[in-house]
Amino acid sequence: MTILLHELALDRGILSSPYCWMVRFALAHKGLDYETAATSFTGIPAIAGGGQKMVPVLDDGGTLIADSWAIAEHLESAYSDRPSLFGGAQGKNYARFVLATFGANVMRPAMRVVMNEVFKRVQPQDRAYYQESRSQRIGMSIEAFTSAPLAERLAGFRTALEPVRAVVKDQTFLAGNTPMYADYIAAGILLWARAASPEQVLAKDDPIVPWFERMLALYPRITKDSTRTWDGP
Ligand SMILES: N[C@@H](CCC(=O)N[C@@H](CS)C(=O)NCC(=O)O)C(=O)O
Image (cartoon, rainbow, N blue to C red; front, side, top):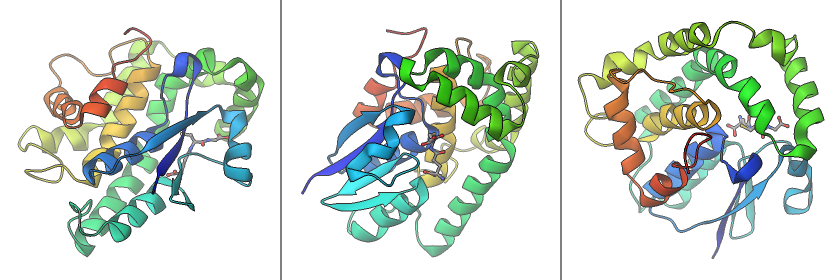
């Protein structure tokens, strides 16, 4: 049965959704084959016959699942014979905490780095929608939200990643010796920031860099599809 991931693409087909990256990692971790269907922001309501508000949406042999966390839970239970994404119930609770922590502490500083860049790069039919929906969400114009010098905004993002830095300087993955969903959450957000920002989001000597390189080398499809950035090929 086919697994189809509906995901978001910007101009030039650049993948930029942190949550879609998390699902790609989860599918790869499970060793599942999958197809992808790229959509624009304004194309989301037309996915799979309608009714969707966000991506990722996974169509697993006709069963539709929306929301990256719900998708991860689905993959864990539907493919329980394959490598575990969470390492049991306690690991799942820990991964949920990591997701919530990133949502509360990292997403906003990351948005301050990427939002003006994404706005430049959304597909043409998405521009007005993106501008209006984001301004509503952040309570100000995109221009005002991203008006501080890039160096300052990058510093805020890098500071927000301190908990990742504190752990991966001493161990191979956030989850220990092997990667698990917590790693995919962090890597998804970094991939989003990196794909959208013209600047290097991490300083070259940041201890997060070797971990991030390990993450990108884990699965050939992710290695390949993550090389397309604004600066890259
Ligand atoms: N809680 C959701 C969040 C997904 C989400 O925010 N998706 C964004 C793209 S990164 C989206 O589809 N936005 C649609 C819109 O803003 O209209 C998840 O984990 O999947």
